Image (cartoon, rainbow, N blue to C red):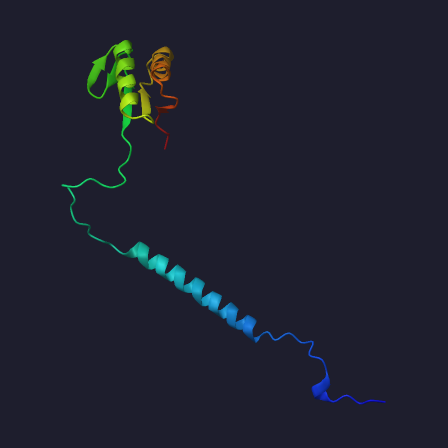
Length: 137
């Protein structure tokens, strides 16, 4: 009969010391990143004026059509009939292919007037026209 010594026994135990090291490293990493995020939000920076230059990522200009209660159409501060409005929209689409439109209809305006503005947008080649409304508080 052969007697085994303690050094000859197979090691079947898992050494968890490296796993604990990794776990503590991850905990420290997550604590540090959440602390940095909080500090970044609390920083108040006074940015310089850049009135002479344009921003690199300026927001796209949206064409706003206002429909009054009497059925008149306003593009900016100018009132115009529906055919002229459609021509202006065609010009806007030629200048910029992905032109966005916001239609703001008065709550007392007839639905037909707002629908006519949407139809003018479709005829001008604008596939998506948004309708503005006010959410209740």
